Length: 557
Image 1 (cartoon, rainbow, N blue to C red):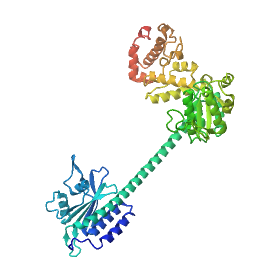
Image 2 (image 1 turned 90 degrees about the horizontal axis):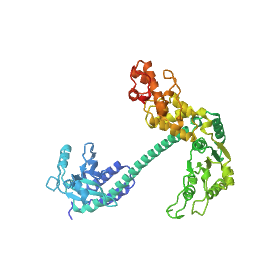
Image 3 (image 1 turned 180 degrees about the vertical axis):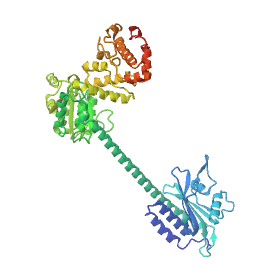
Image 4 (image 1 turned 45 degrees about the vertical axis):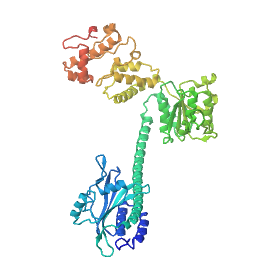
């Protein structure tokens, strides 16, 4: 073996020292420079580069370049594409090395070698150097995937100091070092990726926490007593009772007709209590058959029944620490009433198929529109459960007993519906308000909300809610709108065409009066009536309103 073919005497010692230090480095840039310096020392190379695959695995990026004692600026270094169109880039020696996974020795790049070295020639000219020998080594990790390329140039003879070709005998040492280096690079990349993901996850968690706080604050604000519409004496009594029970664990039983807002009150109790940071869980006991309601409330173990493939927490467990709202408790089957009684008495729940009870700490708020004492007399409701539920009863008044709240409630629901449907509604006309104030609302708040929502859908944007936008049972058969200044004092003559004629006549008379008052200026009349000019013109055409004509007649309707 010639002097040039022998391994450097310090090679093994350098190999052991460097590979040991690679495992402790955690900064990728420092690691790459350490690897390149060590590989140059092992091979006595004058220059070297390390390319690393990008995230798309379609380009090699130059990460570090050393020339002599200097580190070269990489600002303008172009990436090496691994593909040219749909074909592999086999003309570039680094790309070919990546695909083949083989070490490549080239004695003189300026002699024909089968590779395109135009980029290397350009770099040589820019640096005032000449590459005379080249060694290209794949960096393959522990899974035998190529993650980059080590390129070494111009090996110097240990004795003469002259540049010589890389000998074949050095291949094994360099390949072994490259494998260790690739594993170290891979590990640092994974650590950096994990740290980046941790930062993203941490930022996301902080953002979610912030959003949750905002959402919880919004919900709490929504259910503050001050934001619940109700100034009637009967509602003041409800608020007084709520304030007394808020920060206790007493079970609350809400009574009252359907649609009086029992769930709203239950949520207000929860979000104004010390349990507000935990869950509010609601279940309508009349919405599910007995078997489904039981599994929904109590949960089940896998295999408890056909189709139970995995464990499921029931709503009682989900409400642990918070509030469980059981609506329509009067419809709960007798079998489940006994199980619920145990939850209230012992603070324990046993899922279907389970052998042990589980402790729960929750507050129960129940609601019903039924007379539970009557159901006890008929044997449909357990008396012992009734007394466990009726620790603190609160009766909600029907809407007909709190008519003084109607104007505020109407405006609240009008604003809400107008925003939802993106309409500009200027309130209620006097006739519509009169009809709404007369009506008894057997469906209470729920019915009122639906009435207003329908009226907003019926009304045109830029107008007001008129009697014709309300259902017939609200306006009432044979009802007459209240007369206003500038309109006929008695529209009874229009009653021959029925309700639609009366309502239409009232609207036409109001429009005509406004036009007369403002000398038939349509823009000013539309502003006076709080409708758009386009709506005014359409109504003038519908009612055949013209200057000089008399008050609307049945023929126009």
